[in-house]
Image (cartoon, rainbow, N blue to C red; front, side):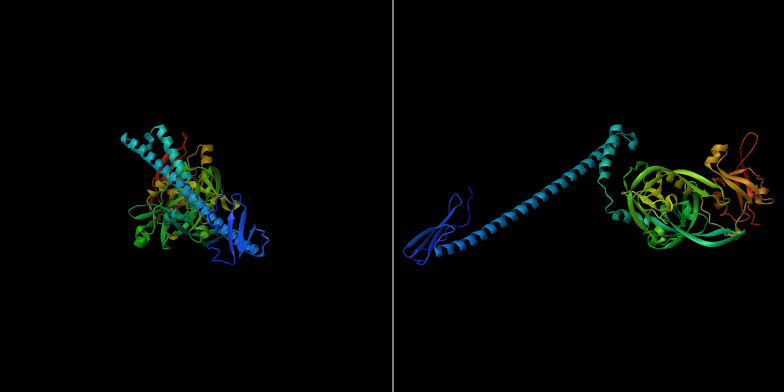
Length: 486
């Protein structure tokens, strides 16, 4: 039964007080409506369609009043209903967040318990944990990683950007036309990552093709300042190079604004994992692109002509494939995960303009041992070409394919020795393979020329060569006093 809370008796006066009209209205229990209309000495009963003129007038007014009251009544309850729904939604949302917070807290507490158990057992590494504990830790980490998104990468970029630099390369481009040789100055740009520091130098990693044949290198830091750099060492086959910037050339203000990048592990990557690429795209300055890991261990062969001949070598390596945009200038820049760790070194050279939506990066787990080795090498400034020392040989590369096919050691194959040159005086002959200079391994003619460019004419270097004999190649060490160009 519906109970009307609104007043249904409008007769507030006696007949004497209201001698003209005194009407009483009632809601019946069945929902019908009746009223009694009093005039002086007269009575009449009327419904909504009462026939009395005065009664009909009063009925219309009351109907309007009832409609207004019903509207107000509905409005109040509708408002209360919406408020209740909103409150309930907030309640369930808060409950869900609290539940998620409790889950995260439980995960962290469980991880801490496992860590404490490992410490109590006297272990210093997770390598000594049980298989069950390792599995549980992986599940906890997986649950945490799955919650991350790359919809907002501002904090990660803010953390990593100071560790990425722009690299500018000025080199001499040599051309041949109708038998005549020409040369002109040219320039290129790329990126680099700050990976370390010693007592005298700030150390960066980049791609070898970014710094190849450089006569002058400059790097620009995140605050816009520029400094000269030297190639400390490189691995042409892996397209990696380590650069050195003297700390004395970097102001204290700039040092306070740059950071050393955190190197992660590319071995733990999964397809679909979010990644961020940072680099000097198109030479315009640092830019950021996002994407995911599209594929892992992508096997690609890269071809390049040696600087001493038109021979083309193919080097096969594995790369991380991503749909994050990697354009010219991005080469040598950082591919990072959502934790801000470098998991790859971008290389535009691999994909180039032949593909769209596919970029490649050198896996950091493959690159890190090479980087660490190159960082230990002594830095030598490139000597001016007019004063540079020369061996007096021409040669070819002994690449991995040739080494496997013919049983040769990797290095620079001597195809010709100039008579009276430094190499001739030191006893080098056609067929020798140079494998090291001053104890530092060389695997191509390009690497040999790059190493020699740091020595002036008249300086003495020690070459390690493999020389043929009836019993096969034998290791031999010779000292060579470098001469001047023709």
